[in-house]
Image (cartoon, rainbow, N blue to C red):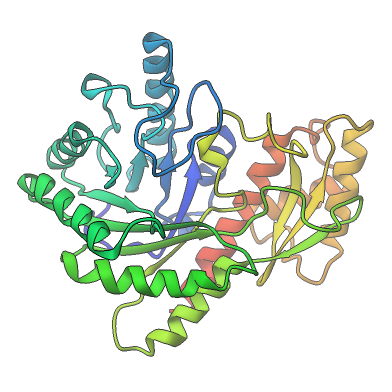
Amino acid sequence: MTDPTTEPIYVPALPARRNALAAYGALAPDVRAAVTPLWTVPPRVGPQRTPGHGRPHPPDPDALALGSHVHRVLAGIARAQRDRPAWVDTRHVESGPRAFATGPPPLRPVTGTERAAWQQVACAEAAAAGGGGLGVRVRPSRAVSDERWAENVVRLLHRIAFARCPVDLLLDLGPVDDTDHGAHRRALHALDLLGPLHPWRSVVLLAGSFPRTRPEGYGAALTETGRADRDLRDLLRHTNGGLGPQPVYGDYGAHDPASADRVSDTGDDPFRGAVRYTTTRTFLVGEVRADGPDHHLTVRAHARDIVDTADFRGAAYSRGDRWLQACADGSGPPGTAHPDAWICAGHLQHLTHVARELRRSG
């Protein structure tokens, strides 16, 4: 069994849907050992949610269907995780105390300052019963004063103190990009403000930079966009100067940070899907239009462009790299034109690359 006190090496915040669950389940054993996901259960119906604003609006109209959705997703997480720990955030699917669930140990429930008091208490009760601890997910807000923000965290910590279990701080910056020069200052400020409030078991800094909308110049050829989340990690390492513990690195895998806040990964995307690849400093993104003819030809052309770059690590590196090579060669299955396959391959090679890079850097 996994030691629940072991500090994670890498925390990807992933939507708990088929493509990401399949990617995590297919990771090589050495990579799985380094990856501790933060799963968010997506909403069942309705528009995209806005994180950090309490209960979902509008609430799910069908309590029975919502319950079945939550049960199915949590069972999928448990199958993918097996005996590995992970956090589970059910913020989009909580309709009341009776509906609260996070799945079996070693899955760790997640709460936050914007959550209702009943949810915070239920989260602590589940953590005490499971024994794996819980996560407090906090999003730095420019609209709330430092004093009020810290008071909200302290109030939450007092409310859940009865559980007497390890607590992890999941500091979530959300989307960042190359123009967001304030992300570094926000991260440092939040760490300085919240770090001393509690003897956190681990402190995770989450940020994502995979594009949600078409980058400038998006078209037939591959587009390259910067990985501002990785750059943020390097900035924090240099700023810290070894004077204190580094926060654990977290990102959003090979998808945009809002992926878990909407019903579908692709249904309301501006381009319905993309072939993707993570290099050391960038994302390579190839558009596949929903209304375009010969999807399979476009997908294979993008795969060939990726494997022909100097950044491609070879088919033996991960199952995601292997899928791209087979797709480029035309030796893969005929169903290469489904967005779930592209996203799954993207997550596979991204998680593998980041986990191994972090292990090398110590």
